Length: 467
Ligand SMILES: *Cc1c(COP(=O)(O)O)cnc(C)c1O
Image 1 (cartoon, protein in one colour):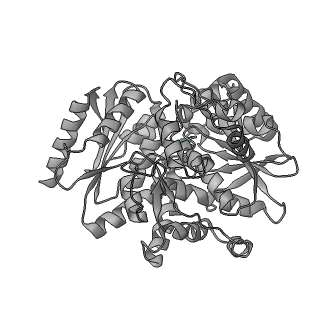
Image 2 (cartoon, rainbow, N blue to C red):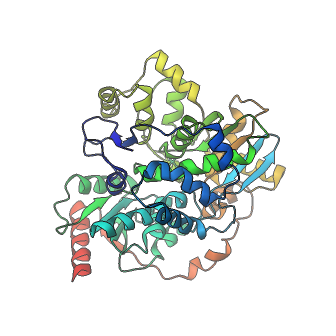
Image 3 (cartoon, rainbow, N blue to C red):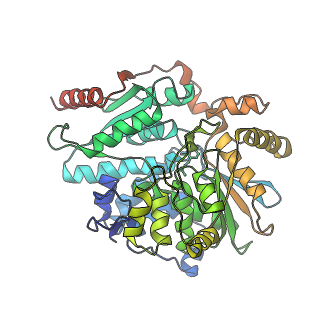
């Protein structure tokens, strides 16, 4: 299987290269040249598989021989062995046709562990084979950083530099990052905001000449195809729990960068009977504005109770546009590169097709709190604020009540206690394996908000590692 860039100016590459780069050289995102389609018979054969067994069947279609089967199977089993629930992604009934898929049983209590536990192992496998080193450089406003650190801390060929805005992430999020230790781990608190961190990362990627010879940078944000690939699996897994009893399932997905819901769209294209996909956003609702009014444009970023969905532009939306524009990469490039200050629109026919794929709803902080409290009173289920946007969107969109509606529960409520308390409920404690988080030592370097200071720090650290 080859992977092509949404912007059409980079050559097609193999899985290994997609994993080791992230963004295509032309600035586009990689997508599979052709999506595998799963027959009904094959799906029936997969229905009883455990999570890891199913993940192996789905993922090997995309890896396409780049890793021997036995090795891949072990990597996948290892990725999910540490999850606290034997089901890995347990499905819970809420009420009527409403369900939640709990995606927070991994080491950092958010769904990003599904992708990053595997990505760390994929990177180390390919790098060992090539005897090459990379540096992961990423900016995080919270969940990505800790999941990346947990996923890559054992990697022998990877050095990690994770930037977060100094004093602007929650204490649980900060401690989850700064308590991860190892010679290859570097937590950097930048004296600036999240946008400043992202700007530094973008510039460092654009000119990597500051790195020691032989090193390159790798992106671990959701533009990396391997992350999307790993997320396709839990749509099948959840669907298989209910299809048979029902003709189809629907999903409501809390999303900001369009990563998680794009994986659901792919599962549907691959043949999983998905009736409806709901995009749930918070007040940063560029995706909802597009679906409801055919207007895609930037507004100012606002803080919310669901910070992991606070974005101005949804980077993975480019992958969907590539399909919507029937793979016309010139139009994709034109659309995404003229965003600054402009409202982008698609044709009426394209907009109708987009709405046939997705419904959407935007949930503000007040509705998020109300949903947390109502859901708890009604069912005893304590939703984190991200999950609550999904539950609310599922209730507000026009749906078929005879089809199960599965909201993706993207984080454990103990990660976002401020919202739970604002909803009038007692803050939940951390799960057992993390109960000592507040007493673990923290390791972090505070640096000024400048590209040069980050570059210098990285040079020193990498030079010290190679002595
Ligand atoms: C990252 C994240 C999201 C949004 O994920 P997308 O990749 O933007 O779809 C939602 N909830 C939580 C808890 C997250 O960490």
